[in-house]
Image 1 (spheres, one colour):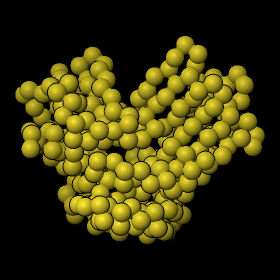
Image 2 (cartoon, rainbow, N blue to C red):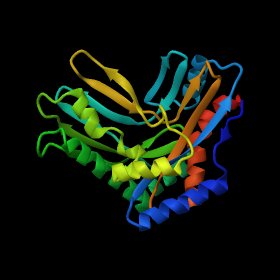
Image 3 (cartoon, rainbow, N blue to C red):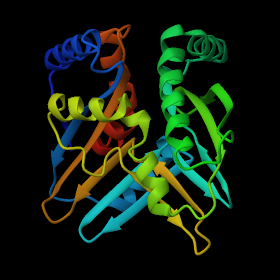
Length: 276
C-alpha cells in the first residue's frame, strides 16, 4: 500500500505563504499546519500494523484503539494532560530535528535544536498558551513551568518538550478541565480560536480523530491523555485510512524546511504502510 499526499509540495509551499500573510495581518502568530496522506486497501491488519509501527518507532504514548470498524494505530510521543489527585501536568511538544547518523552528529543536532531561536520561540508561545489554559481551572499562583525547552530523544527525531504543572481548584469537573484546555495548543497555535478558524480554511482535509486526545480515566477522576499524532486512522468497513503530519508555522519559518520536517515525521508510518 502506498499512501498519497493530499497536497503537492507546490501547494504546501503556497499554503505557507498564506499563513505568513495571516501572521503579518495580525490574525495569528503561530499556526500548526498539517498535511494529510490517505490510501485505500483490500486487506489491512491494524494489530500487525501497530506492532510494526511501534517496533520501528516505539513511543511513550503508543496505543491501539477500536470503535466499531474504525481503528486508531498510534505511536504518539506527546502527553496532552494528566491529572493525579489535585495535580495537573501538560507537556506540549514544539521543536523538532532529525537524529544523527552517529553519536557525534546526534549530539550536534541535539545542541542545534536546543540553541535554535526559532524553535525556542515556537515552544515558548505554546507553553505560554498552555499556562493560560491551565490557569482557568487551577489555584491562583499554582501554574508553574517545571521544565522549559527540554530535549528528548526519540527513534528518528529529537523533540523539544516543556512541562507545565498546576494544582486544580477543588470540585472542578472533568468537563470543566477539558473545556478549558482542549484542543491542545500544540495542535492549533495561538491565539487558539482565531488560529483554529484559519486551520479550517487552509487545510484540505478534516482532521477527525487526528490531533484529538486518547487516554484513560479512573474511578477517582484521575486521567492521562495523549495527543493523537504519528497515528493512522483506518476504517475497515470503507477500506480507507489516513494520517496527517504537521509543524508550527511562524513568521520565521522556512517553508522548505517545514515540508521536510513533515516528511520526517511521516517516515515511520510510510515505512509500515508501504511494507518497506
